Image (tube, rainbow, N blue to C red; front, top):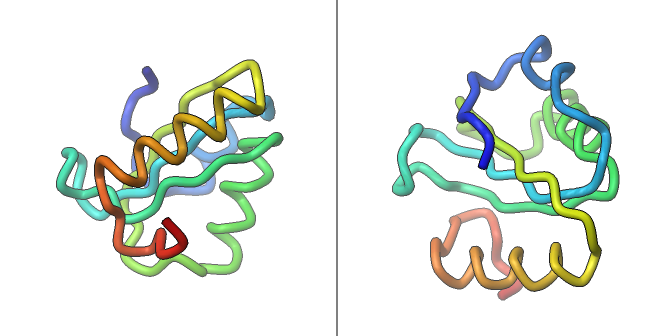
Length: 91
């Protein structure tokens, strides 16, 4: 499990560029989850969100390195169902 960090370019730059899941939050606790995503290159994907500003309200983020794409898909689905983030509308 990773640490919840402030949504800053400096913090995003510290993220490894491996594959995994990431969680965008507007509050540090579980109630603050507003988007759950997956990526094969975590740092690049987080920087893309940061530069585009495509998920409003983000103040915090965390990430979870995961080694297989099948595990990433399974966990993403489970977490979206469990936490019901407002910007994940496809599930």
